[in-house]
Amino acid sequence: MATVKVTQVRSAIGKPKDQKRTLLALGLRKMHQTVTHETSSSIDGMIRAVHHLVKVEHI
Image 1 (tube, rainbow, N blue to C red):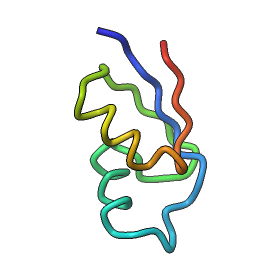
Image 2 (tube, rainbow, N blue to C red):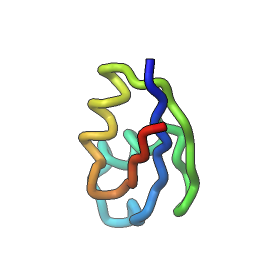
Image 3 (tube, rainbow, N blue to C red):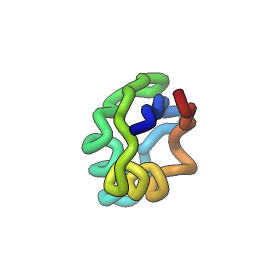
Image 4 (cartoon, helix red, strand yellow):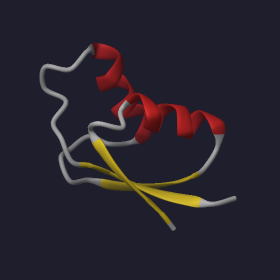
């Protein structure tokens, strides 16, 4: 499977609770924090839900 690097580039302040929980589920707790994940349908769905708050790089 492919790996993706997800970096939070925008703040979650003022965003809906479900988007904040999605960032936490991805492992993002701070601005400019980067995590890596193996791609799966659940990870892809979470990234799609917060695509405006994160930057995604395919490794």
